[in-house]
Length: 528
Image (tube, rainbow, N blue to C red; front, side, top):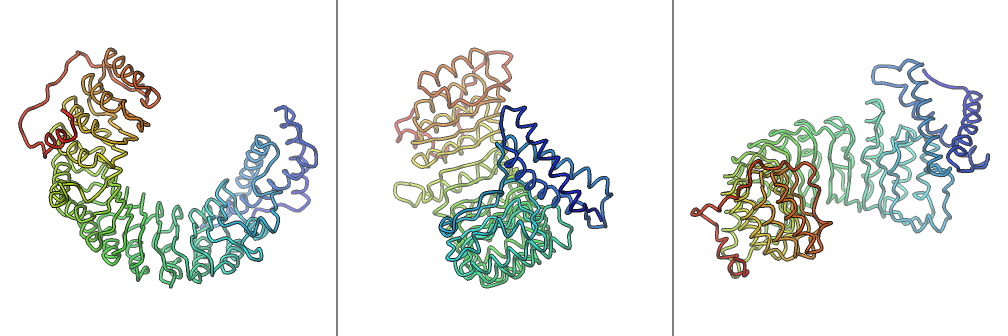
């Protein structure tokens, strides 16, 4: 097992002190020997702890030479950083007064990657042990806890138990062998299970899998009134999804569920759908980048009918396809409080996008003067092959939400000039647009200029993205001129990847076909 004697470590600190002083002098920064020595001792502790953890693997110990090399590299990195920071070391020499500790509400450890020992944990978690502590939210993210450090953290959590509201223990087991990582999760979970007011729990960025989820059984299945649960980038497989649904036995209070960058697939989505069917209070669902296909998408859409409080829905980067549209559109139409809808890169295709828009528009017919029940503020339909025909349905939906829509993402579709001009007419009706993304849509001069003319006069505009299109040099000059004349040059995104069209050619808008009430809505808005 890799280790260094106390004498060897003291020698490292002495040499490191000299190196820090020399580096500082070379940078024109004068550090006293005392400050350099304090910094050297602090970063040696960090490097040594990191090396101790790295020395252990799930199958045994790393070669001594490899661990020693890693220790030396870490020392070098930290020495350079401490000079850049003027001699300051994160977590060292920052002891606060008792009064300051007592006033702290959020204890946030996020920052550099550190492997905590029990001693280091006692230091950074001191506010949790302060008499009369006001800490009600904790964030341990980026600090890797071993068994000893987790035991210290558990004591701190138990001390705060009556007042603890939010616990972010994301990314807290990095670099730990599996058995130790699972023990850490069990210890922290057990401590959190005693917090009667805990409403938000973040377990993201931990390599959980099914074993990790079950290691958190105490808090997931306990009496904590969890309203927000985040399991992003945790390896949430089919079995882990099933475990989550089993352990979260009473999701009736759940308002927010964040699942991203997992490998749930259709079957896993089915397990989560079963959980959501028992969550009538749900307001915010993110189930993105999780390999969910048509069957899983349909299950999720049906589960959303359990309630009518949804405010944000993100199903992006899943191959849902147009098969989900009937159930999804029906579920969306039943959510009167919906504000943000992200269906980017869901393989809906032009027909699927058209049907979603058509169903939502039809659901508004019973409202006052056909006004939507929803007030959409963000709409994402990127990478869905939206063509000029589907653009009419999208434009009609945009106009229906002219008073509320702030963000529109139609990146990497197939609008062409006709589609861009159609969308531009709708954009002109927006009251306070902030961001419009039309990157990669085969748009040429006519479409780009039409969009600029629609948006440039809007004081609220912060970003118009039109890169990766086919705009001629003359078109670029006209586009920039429109934005500059309105004082919005800074809002025009980069155009470095624009591909100049071979011939100047402006397409005429295609006549006929369903315009989904767009012409009538634009006429009411005074736009022709």
